[in-house]
Length: 66
Image (cartoon, rainbow, N blue to C red):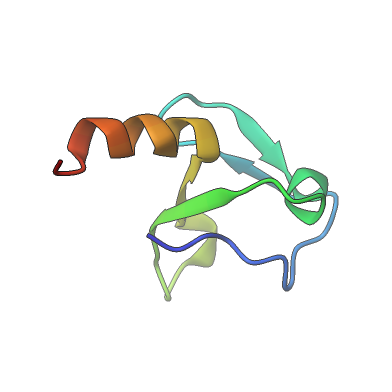
């Protein structure tokens, strides 16, 4: 799963975690917060789906084979 890059991110942007619903701001991304890309739509970028770092860690624990 890819991590959202800082390229093209502006401080006033916001992203919503698909699991917990928390909002991650563009400024948080610029400051180093990780946001994982879950689903990409090349035709409609605003519909991309993201997962915050905390939920991604929980997801890995649950679904990653040991």
